[in-house]
Image (cartoon, rainbow, N blue to C red; front, top):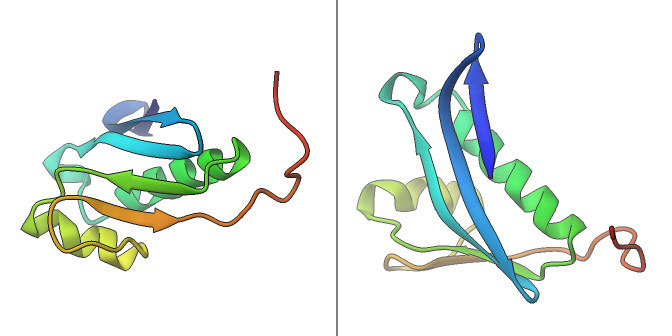
Length: 99
């Protein structure tokens, strides 16, 4: 779970979960005033970086409506309907894991 803040005010967040080597982003949401400022992109980049660090091979989002698909396409996700997916590169220190 990630929270986005601007001037110490919560403006959005994202929730994802990992199952094996796949991460599913369940929710990414911003208040209307925080949209188109790059905050959603930064949330997704942070989720992807943590997913890679944890050894995930792919990440996907469900519920990507027509409006949201363009956002995910620009981030490298593929899909034509509400389910969009992106392959992730291997972690740099693939032999390391946090315990």
